[in-house]
Amino acid sequence: MIAMPPSVRSGAIVALRLFDIAYAIDLAQAERLWSARGDSSRSRLSHTPSKALAFDVPPVMLTMDAIELDLGGSRVAAGVTARLYEFGVVALSLRIAADDCSWSEYSRRVASVNQAVGPAADAPVWSALLDTLISTLQAALQRPTATRLQEDYLLAIVRQCSEPLTAAELVERVDLAALLSDESRPLSEGARRDLLRQSFSYYVDDLVVMSWDRAFVYEPRGDSDVIDVLEVANAQLLEMRYYDELLDDELPRMYDWVEDARRVNDLRAPRRYADLARRLYGLVAEVTELTEKVDNALQVTEDVYLARVYTAALELMRVPKLSAAVDRKLAIIRDTYTALYDEASASRSQLLEITIVLLIVLEIAMALIHR
Image 1 (cartoon, rainbow, N blue to C red):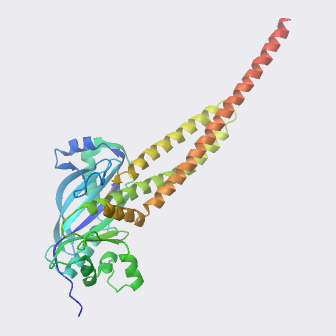
Image 2 (image 1 turned 135 degrees about the vertical axis):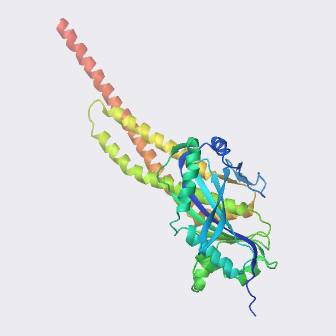
Image 3 (image 1 turned 90 degrees about the horizontal axis):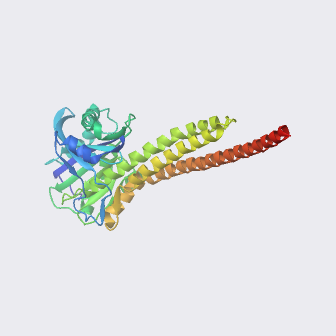
């Protein structure tokens, strides 16, 4: 006999939307600017010892006014928070309660949240929240960006079911593959295995299952560290995407600058080479500094469970591959900088040799004229 799915006594759905808004954010100034509007606090992982896993620079959590969402024709309250990261990312979060409902009702609520404010939705609510945030924090943003590059993620959270269940029992009694895929038709066994492959448990009664754009979290103790870790992974993905696209745009321009510099054959050539080399060196230094901050956003040392979740999330989101692509493009720019520096040095040496020869010729000519 197949057991019926449990009902959800206490749960929530969290929609995340992350934006790259600046080169960097002055977090202390952002806290001061926001203090007149609402509460703020420095984020830390709630249940993990700081020596085991902690933020490199703790982000700032801002509490915003709650809003109402239209979910399938009904108005539902959503709590709103914003987390600011030093490297220029803001993570907006909408939390919708999902309590005292059957599993099918819970699944429909997850799907309706995804349709309303998920990746496929053209939801103006995100732009409105972001505009409110930026208008208040403008002075804390260093070199604001206009591209508004973004990432999104959906978290389905269950804290308590109608009966105590282990993670294994929950997986047997509910269709997590359908929840994670948002598919109404039955999935093949291979597709189900792929969707449920990234599953992690620490105790017998907790579970995290991740996919590319959403995750299911079963946590009777109400711990939030896994949710925070997934948000950091998304923030790193967003920044690596930003720098990958930035370097994609810079490389063709760099080739044009090099060609322009090489067309100059007069006395200005060494200075043109040197100026271009300094410009490329500045770009490399800037991108390297920021990517190191992104890479070190979360320090993992002793918490093996969260380290596994964090590493799997980064791999699932292809962050290491993007990071490697950024490193390759930086290497090209570094090599170009070195070549330009060598050309500038060679041009200066050649100019110096010509100058010395001219001075010798001039001295000989003056000696002959004197005689």
